[in-house]
Structure formats: C-alpha cells, structure tokens
Length: 179
Image 1 (tube, one colour):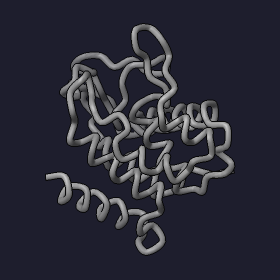
Image 2 (tube, rainbow, N blue to C red):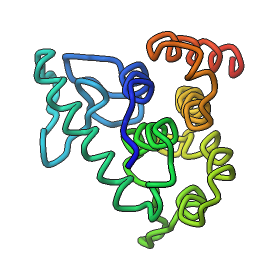
Image 3 (cartoon, rainbow, N blue to C red):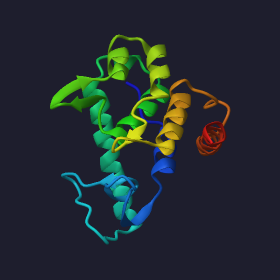
Image 4 (tube, one colour):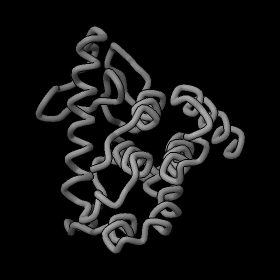
C-alpha cells in the first residue's frame, strides 16, 4: 500500500502556508491554519486565531481525510507508487474529491475514471488541468499547484533532490512557466 511521502507532505504545506488567523481565501472561503475550511472537525470563525500546534493537529486531520477520499474512491490505489499516491493526496486535500456536482448530480471526473481504468499515464496528464478554478474563476495558483502535483505524480526529479529542495524547485519552475 502506498504512503504519503515527504515530497507530498511538503507540497501540501508549501501551497497551503501556515496562517494562524482566519482569513478569506479570495474566493469566499473562511480559512485558517494550513488551508483549513470549516468541517465537522473544526469550525473556522471570523477573526479567529489558533496556535501552531492546533494548526498541525488540524493539518493531520485534513490529511487523514484526504487519504480516506483517495482510498475510498480509487479501486486500484495499490498500483500507485508513493509519489503518485502523494500527488493524489495533495489534490484531494485541496479539492475535496475526485467527483464533481452539476445540477445536483454527482459526476465522476475524468481523473477518477482514468485512475480506476488503470490508465495511470493518462491520469498524470489530466492532473495538469484538473480543477484549476475556484468559485468559477480561473486560478493561477491552482494551475501552479496542479503542475507541481503532475511533476510529483510522474516522479519528476524526486529522486534527484531532497523533499524540501524538490518542493522549492517545483514551485519555482511552475512560477516561471505560468507567469
């Protein structure tokens, strides 16, 4: 069974960034800690502050939730290596699911269809463009994140660099390509 590795964990933390006071993420979602929005575990309130240990506790919970999403929705997660699995955890952490809703209907995304059809190379390509909007608006930040997740999924340079250096490298590369 694959595991979330240091590359994926570092990628999640680098894109979410620690914020100890609640804020609007720019798309209307009240957020705190490492990109946490209100759920059954922790409700985010306006002008709320937390300390770093609480942020880390919430992050651990949110990562467990993302792992549960991946494990529930994928039929063949055991075919994935740790980098692929970690990239998918990052996506689930950020987007919440590999399914979408339209007109009250649950839609299985092309990413989930590809993964469950064992089309792992195709899934890697889909990651680059997967859910790159927020509240209906295109997001350069999400495009950068998806590119980094694609690189992690395809193990781009993960064996050449330490996890911390890889995260810094991938973010710089994504920035230079997309700006």
